[in-house]
Image 1 (cartoon, rainbow, N blue to C red):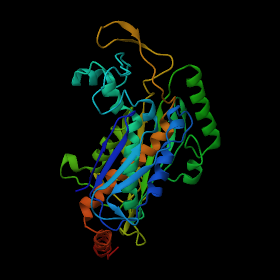
Image 2: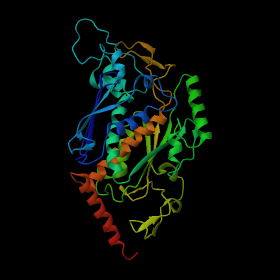
Image 3: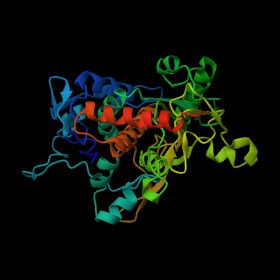
Image 4: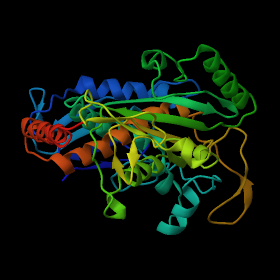
Amino acid sequence: MFRYLTAGESHGPGLTVIVEGIPAGVLLTEQYIASQLGRRQQGYGRGGRMKIETDYAVVQGGVRLGETLGSPVAMWIENKDFANWTQAMSPAPPDGEVDRKENTRVVPGHADFPGALKYLAHDMRNVLERSSARETAARVAAGAVAMAFLDEFGIEIHSQVASIGNVNSDVSQDADWDAVENSDVRSGDPDVAQKFREAIDEAKANRTTVGGVFQVVATGVPVGLGSHIQWDRKLDGRISQAMMSINAVKGVEIGRGFENTRRPGHDIQDIVVPNRDDSRRFSRTSNEAGGIEGGMSNGEPIVTYVAIKPIATMTRPLPSVDINTGEVIEAPYHRSDVCQVPPACVVGEAMMALVLAHAMLEKFGGDHILEVKRNVAGYIDSHREFGTSV
């Protein structure tokens, strides 16, 4: 069974990551994981925390001499900023009076208010430390392990920004991904990229924040991942849950789900045609469904759009209350980004990788990567035999 767990707080000693279920024999290095973590830290509109941290995942189990062992992969990411929080975030009981850096003021739109009531936390730092987007560094490290596995099958995952604020980009599943990677706002169009930066600058000048939409595309995914037979096995449902779990995400669509509701049915179905050059023996003339039909991958690129709201912490705070006294006050400001859409792209890639790795292992299984590859090859051969008359 494939699964992963993360632990740790934003200003605690660090983040722990465990990934279980990756077969033996997958090539994996700390440098590969670091390359993914570095991508998450980039992006126009990032806050001051990125000037402190240089994220690096130290592999502490499950890998030997650059290959996975089949046992759980364990990683540790140090929080450099913990040096400024050693008293307030120490796991040990206090020895005398300490500066707890207590926080009792609610930030509207943040997890601290419902979390404080749920866990009876009079100091909301107990909630906001874990609900912080700092946790996504651990997800990206876990996603890097999943990507190393997917690399063995030629499955690639890319992402780009589709909109920031009111500025939209006409993105496609066939983008110039090298150009996207070289852009600090993850846009391959220089003119659009400049408009994205201007939207971020305007939000910063107004002491507010700005959100947007990003696209995640997975190519090389075999047909038949997921299943139509139960609600919780549908691949689109699993991807949507994974994307929705990212901090501040409020909307997910597969393909152009919302846009296609405004078009007639004849215009949005993906026609199937014979194609002897395709391993499925068939191909599609379009990909309006975003690569998933009936909860199963259909062999086309999987395309997902993710809407992320403007984050809650702002230098011009909203009115708020003290959770303990009920006093009307201003919300506190915690060091944060003006816009987190570009770095959220990388988190979205990680979540896509984790879902697809799970689905691949669910269908093809195996204790060693060679066994999984044989299973995949046999499955693809069955499609060639199935379509011999095509």
